[in-house]
Structure formats: C-alpha cells, structure tokens
Length: 310
Image (cartoon, rainbow, N blue to C red; front, top):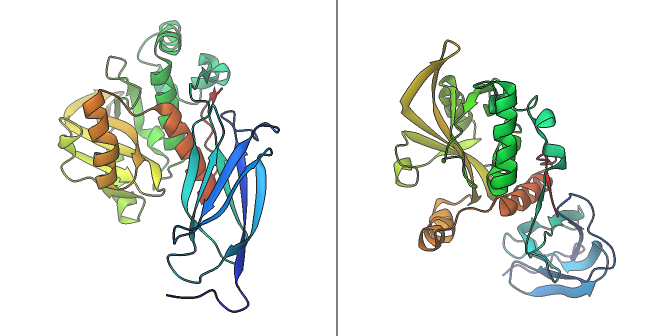
C-alpha cells in the first residue's frame, strides 16, 4: 500500500454549492459537507452555513485509489448531491461545484416562453401554423411540465454535442407531438445523415454503441450513448424502419433520452429495473442536476436549459 508522498502529503479542495437557479446557494442555510477519500475514510464532515468551503490538509496517497475522493452536500429540505471521483493532488488545488434542489422541485419556465425558445429550436414548430405550434407548446408547459423540462434538457444537451458537421439539433426536422413525448424522452424526424455523423463521432470517442437496443427501445435499429460524463449522457436511438421525406430530405425517427448512469449495467440495475417495477420514469429534475454538475466538472460551457428549478 502506497504511503503519502514525501513533501507532497496533502491536498486542497474547494466545494461550491449552487441552487436550482444556477446561482450560489443562499447563505445562512445549514449545509452538511462530507469528504471521503478513496480508502473510504471520512476526512471532513461538518455543518457549515456558507455555500463555499475550502478543505485543506486532505491526505495525498499518490496512488490510484486513495486520491479519488467522494464529495457530498446535504441540506434539510433539499435532495442530496455529490460527485465521485474527485481526483486530488497537492500540485493543483481541486474545485467541485454541486447543486441542491428542493425535495419537491418546481419548474420555472419564465425563460422558456415560446417566443424565446422557437428561434433556438425551430423544429418544435414548422409542421403546423405558428399560432397552433405555440398553443401546443404552452399546453405542454401547463399540463405536462415534466415532459417540457425533459424536452428542454435534451435540446440543450444536444446543442453541446459537436459532430463532424454541426450538432444533433441541426439534423432534427420535426418533433413528433403525440403521447410518446414523455418526461424521459421524445421522438422526432431527423435527417438520416445523423446516423453516419454519430457513427463517425463514436470512432473518435464521443459515443459508444448500445448492444441490442431494442430491449430498452422497442423497434430500435441501433443506439449510441454519449460517453463524456459519468452520469447524464445523451443517448440517440434510431428507428430506421420509419421513413419519410421532409422538405426533400430523407428522414428517419430518432429517440433522444438521457440516462442517469453511463455504465450499461448500472443503468439496467439502478434505473431501468426500478422504473419497470414502480412504473416510474427518469426524472428531468435529476437529469438537470446531474448534467449541470458533470458539465461543470468537465469544464464545458454551462448547461443552461431555458428554465430553472425552485
């Protein structure tokens, strides 16, 4: 077992906590911070009334296990949040940003009104007159806010996936507005060229194929999952037997969704199976938090769907 490196015996970790509006968590609220090293030893556990702490003197083991820390933040009335692994080193102080949302999260779509969203995501309309498209969108906001939150999560996440030419959004022609537009996925007609773009991206390490995709996605021909993050990766599933031309473009059906877990086994055991047993679906509020934390950790542009959680 490796011992702490001589002269490099400790590391520093800054933890910042944000709320569902993507702003620093309010001061004065009691946050319980827990920091555990890779050997499962709790190195810091304390209630603090500020959204930022700097933990110093955290042991540096100079090995592949001990220096992979786990960080958790908890506040009464809010869902616990955490991240693992946070790799620590005495050479570079580490920072992790976490998000706490209420136990009963509510969606505020003030920034997601039709006139703001339609120019960014034109495929939400176009198949019907604009007034009808707006009414359809506003009905979704009022009657199925979880489904709208999921739709905006997915559109925002796909806008940050850069393919050989454009992003997946550039290939989507029309959302399919029916009962399949749910709180964990939607279906849309897309330019069939998106399949080749995703295959190319997979060769370069952005996606990985899902084996036997029809098991989790009935009727699917192939499916590809983004592999940039530990959690909240976009999955693009194609239904190539469904075809039509839109504006002269050969189109097939694409089914975007976001899973909590990157690992297929964890996804099946911890997400798919419980949902099957309880009849539940992936929660867009959880996806919002996981994708935001993962993006911040990876140093990517901030995940900012046009709504906030209060």
